[in-house]
Length: 99
Ligand SMILES: [Zn+2]
View 1 (cartoon, rainbow, N blue to C red):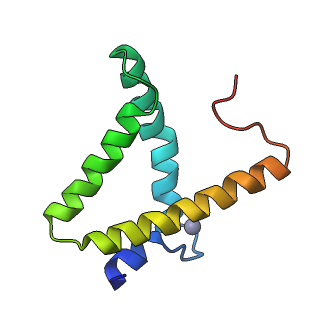
View 2 (view 1 turned 120 degrees about the vertical axis):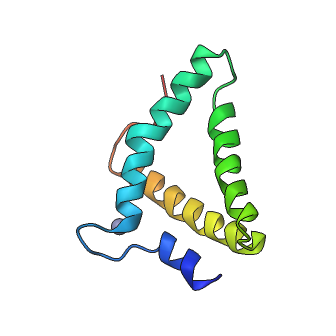
């Protein structure tokens, strides 16, 4: 994975860690917005989330970022998110999206 992409997915343990800041923005702004657009347009749940993510990553491809680097970065990020979800469940937090 190239160094520039690596920097984008690694916590730097500072108060203004790039990873934590961007994940906060996604959770606070992008996820609720995508869910609202799906409902307003009668689209299946997660359809816009998935297409939106792919579209944003497609912009990276267009800029010449290697697809293998993007695949590897996403795989690492999903591993981290999966671990965080498992940790939350152990702590007794409710799983997101459950009714
Ligand atoms: Zn962080």
